[in-house]
Structure formats: C-alpha cells, structure tokens
Length: 294
Image (cartoon, rainbow, N blue to C red):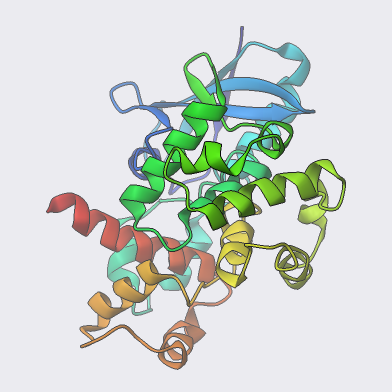
C-alpha cells in the first residue's frame, strides 16, 4: 500500500464535502475518521483509494492511500479534479461576498463541487434521477448498483456499460425502474459499447458541443446534459434552470409566492457568472440543510 500527503490551498471544508457525499447511500463515508473511499477506473482498471482529511478549513491537507503503485500518479491527478483541489476556492468565495448569495456562501464556506467518480456512472445516475424526488432517486440508484454492480474494499462500483447493455428491461423493472427509464439506461450503454458515444473525449469539447452530443441520445435532455457538464466534467458556469431544487432554493431565498420563472432565474443569476456552477451547488446545499433539520 502507498500513502501520499497533499496540501491544498484554503478555504476548503472537507467535513461539509463529506456531509453532502453522505446523502448518497452508496458513498462509504466515515465522519469520525474524516474519510471516504473512492472507487475509480484508471486505464479501465478498477481501483479504490481512501481519502482522509487531516487539516482544517484554512489549511486543508489530506492523506491518500491506495494499493496499486502502477496507477498512483494518474489516480492522484484524478482525485485532484474530483475534489476540486486543483483550483483554489478563495476566488469563488470572494466573487459571492457582495452578492445575494453571500449568507449561503458564508454558511457553507469551503464546500467544493465534488465530481462523480467516472463519466459513465455520472450519466447513468442523472438518467435514474430524472423527475424523481431526491430520496427515492438515491434509493433507486442504490438498488441498481447493488443488484448489477460490484464491490471492492467495501466501495461500490456501478455496473459497466457492457454489463448494462446485456440487461433486459424486465430486470430493471423488477427493482422499480419505469419501462422507459430502463430503455434509456440500456440504450445509453449500447451506444457506448457500439462506439457511437465516447465519454472519454467529452473533456476536450466545449459545453455546447457536449450538450449537442448528449441530447441526441434517447432519454437525455437538457437537464441531464447540464448535470453531466457540472458533476461529470466539472464545468464552472452551469445553472440548470429546469432543476426543481434550484427553483425551490430561489423561492426560499427571495421569499417568492411560487417558484421563479425562467426569466426571473436568468435575472437573478446574471451577476453570479462565471461561477454559476457554484451558485447552483450552494443553492442546493441551502435546501438540503433545511431538510436535514426537519
């Protein structure tokens, strides 16, 4: 086993990161030891890393542990992007200090956008979560992964596209997928293994090119594509206006009698660019915390 220590520029609140990760029952989070196990594919090989926070918000540092020396360097580089260690958050925090979101940003200061651990699982999760409340979305995703995926060192890996492409719609309906959602997930997997969709090149494409590529696939609309851009690729300036969570957060923030219109959301968000993705995250976080307190 290898061990590596990383120092990151603050502010960075890993405890709040763990808090948000723990909303997903598939995440192996240990609050006492401030750790999470991260299942990754490096050169198509499944590996598991443990990330442990040993610093504080202003001087964050981490201990990374893994088994395979062969993939150590690439795995650490992937972790840096997943946990947003590659770019300091201070500039983001400063940007929102004079905005309508300043109180939310102060409450959740140092919360980073944490990416899904690989592109395929991100897209599958986005499809599963379509038009579902968050609680059942997590339940359905957990059933899917624990039925068709696999575990290494306690960490759950999503089933591969090859596995999912071989499934029958009835197998997914048995765990409460709708017939249409089952078709979408299987169809996406078939597109990948047949070579019609290459997720590995997405990082090199513009936001618009990614959108245009993904929405051609049955079952993927603007909401799903935007969430992939945000939580798969980590693009900094995404504001999914069709997202119900963001709409509810804005309704609460501004004391609106009903959810804001698309035009109102556009007006509110003008000054939040070029960090709209962080505005989205902190708005989500504001209502997640509210629901946790109930």
